[in-house]
Length: 383
Image 1 (tube, rainbow, N blue to C red):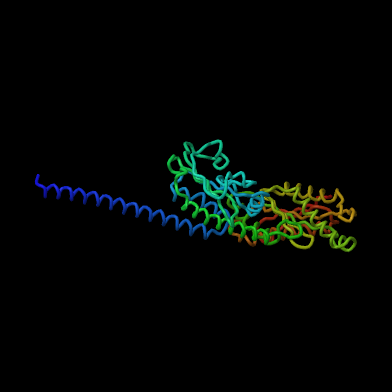
Image 2 (image 1 turned 60 degrees about the vertical axis):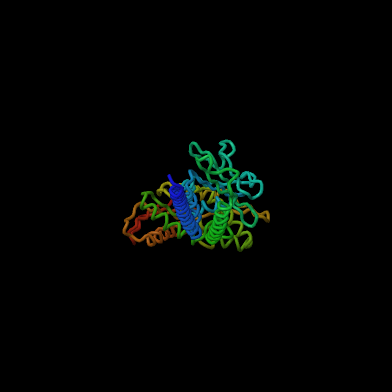
C-alpha cells in the first residue's frame, strides 16, 4: 500500500472515530436534556403543589421514576409531633405515604453538618431511613433538607447500583434538588398550619364550624362511595349563662375548655368535634349507627354531669349538657350533598331542642333519611 493510501485509510478511521464520538456526545446531550426537562417538570409540579399530601406524594412517587432510583424516602423533623398531629387532623392518610416518616431529633438523621452522605447501603445503619428498603439495595444518598441554615429533614435516595452513590461523586445537583424540595415543604407545611389555625377554635382548641361544615360534606361523599353511616351530635351546655353570671367569664371559659376535653375523651380519632359558637358543640361520628351514636352521647352526658368542674379560683360547680343525635342511615345519590349535610345538622339541632324542652341533661335521638321534610319520631333517653 502506498503512503497516500495509508494516510487516506488512517484519515477515514479517524473520521469514523470522530463521528462515533460526536454521535455519543449528541446522544449524551440529548439524554441529559431529557433528564433536565424531566427534573424541570418535577420542580414545577412540586412548586405548584397545593397540599401536604400532594407535595409528598409527588416527591415519593415521581422522583424514583425521573431519577431512575429504586427507592426514595422522606424524613421530617417533628420534635413535638405538631406536623403529624395537624396533618392527621386535616385528613392526611399516612398509610398512603409509607415512605414518609418523622424524627424527633436532628441527631436521628445522622448528619455532621449540612453536606449529603453518599455511601454503600448498610441495613443496620440505614434501616430508619429506609424502613421498607427493596431487596439488594446497594448505595444510598442521604441529603439534608436545609432552611435558613437549619435542617428540617432528610431526602433519602436509594439504588441497587453499587456505583450510583459513592463518596467520590459530586453533590451539587442533588443539593440543588433538595433545596427546592425543602422550600416547598416549608411553604406547604406553613400553609397547612395556617389552614388548621383557621379551622380551629382558639379558646377550646377543637375545630370550628367552618371545619365541620367542610368535613361533613367530604364524609357524606365518602359514605356514598363506601356505604357507611354517619351520625351527628348537637351538644349544648345547660344554663351556661348562669355560670358566667355567677362565677365570671373566666370561669365560663374554663368550663368550655373542660367540656370540650370531656367530649373529646369519648371520641375516636376518626370522629370530629367542633365548637359551633357560644356554648354549643357539634360532633361528627364516622361509621356509627344511631344506637352506637346514642351510647357515645350518653357517655358524654354522664362524663360532664357526674364529675364537678374544678375552677382555677378553687370553686367547684356542677355542669350538665343536653344532646341531640341524628343519624344518616341511607340516602339517595341524587340529593345534593350540601343539602343533606345541612339537614342532618338541623335534625340533630331539632333533637337537641327537644332535649332542652324535656328537662335538659338528657339525650334525644332522631334517625334522619335524606328526603327533605321527612322526620322520623324521636326517642328520649332519660338521664
